[in-house]
Amino acid sequence: QVQLVESGGGLVQPGGSLRLSCVASIMINAFDAMGWYRQAPGKERELVARITEGGSLNYADSVKGRFIIAKENAKNTMYLQMNSLKPEDTGVYYCHSAASRNYWGRGTQVTVSS
Image 1 (spheres, rainbow, N blue to C red):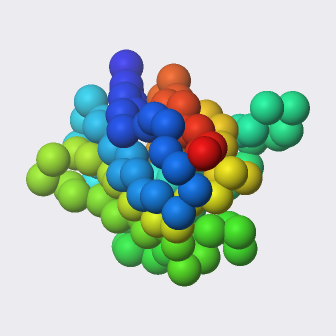
Image 2: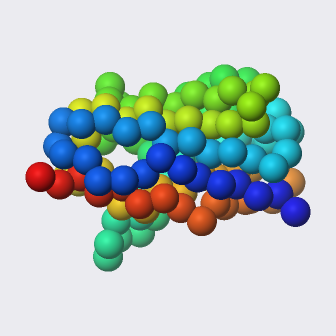
């Protein structure tokens, strides 16, 4: 059973930074792609950033220039560096991976507030 475990969320002031981590229970180069999604209260889950095994990157327009997705195969870990955070970035951030099926982590809460 594949497990994804997120960490790094918390409370941060507007303009601040956080780095999220997602550790997988298997080698992440087995996945076709990995990504971060977020869900704000009362809203649907949305894609934030995605990285394929080949290294292609996709970002939501709302985070371009502020967030950076990366992965470190040797540590079976994916990261999301979040800079210049805004209150609208608040939500639960989920790690996702795609192979023969989709896998999800349980999420980590990010709250951007003064």
